[in-house]
Image 1 (cartoon, rainbow, N blue to C red):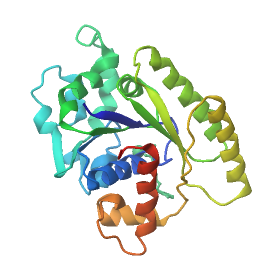
Image 2 (tube, rainbow, N blue to C red):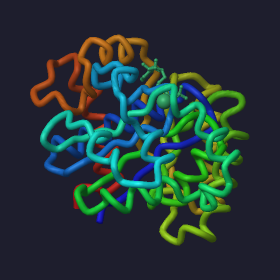
Image 3 (tube, rainbow, N blue to C red):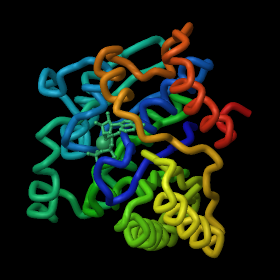
Image 4 (cartoon, helix red, strand yellow):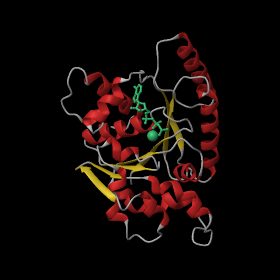
Length: 264
Ligand SMILES: Nc1ncnc2c1ncn2[C@@H]1O[C@H](COP(=O)(O)OP(=O)(O)OP(=O)(O)O)[C@@H](O)[C@H]1O
Ligand SMILES: [Mg+2]
């Protein structure tokens, strides 16, 4: 059975998707069989692999809302022999309305993703889930099925409150999902300023008090990364022989995968 790893926080733009695709890419390149499920209607997983999310007729939305299995194979898109994705697009924006207005059809609305994952879990070593910057029905479905949650933390003014809120939300799902745990808090878009160091220290103290691991790896703030990913059309961790310029970007994500112990 696959290990289910979700990247989540209610803050936007803090590298949830970048971490998800690069951890997935690193694991796939190192021989693990990976499925990435996009649970965000922005559709950034498809985009990260150079694909247009609107080109797919069958997406995660169809798998979550159709309680038969007829769409399953159509929704799985093979990117490389070791890496498949299930894309999301704007259809997913209507999930809450469609599900919550039909309680008869969807009595178990927190376990829609669980039902999908049960059907594919044996085919993969890891299922990586990218999530939207929100704590609604999608997040509830994710926390009901994830084993590991990784929280990216951009050390800015509102980040601490957001971290506390996200941790609190996840804790609530431990009653229904016994394997759920927060395995890492990863500082992202870090700048070498006193302010950033202070925010990181505050977050470290908090995670220590909650017995939550805090990553020793920092993702530095750099505009180059976005340009580079758009140009490559794939995560930098999937480049087998990266140039001198790309190497440091790849190395930082490979180190994160090592820290998480996913290659043992
Ligand atoms: N190291 C970096 N430093 C600065 N910007 C970065 C870095 N890595 C990625 N970015 C850019 O930051 C933006 C947000 O990244 P990303 O999409 O991974 O965040 P997210 O948390 O998934 O966002 P959302 O909440 O919208 O889903 C993207 O434009 C991305 O290219
Ligand atoms: Mg994202």
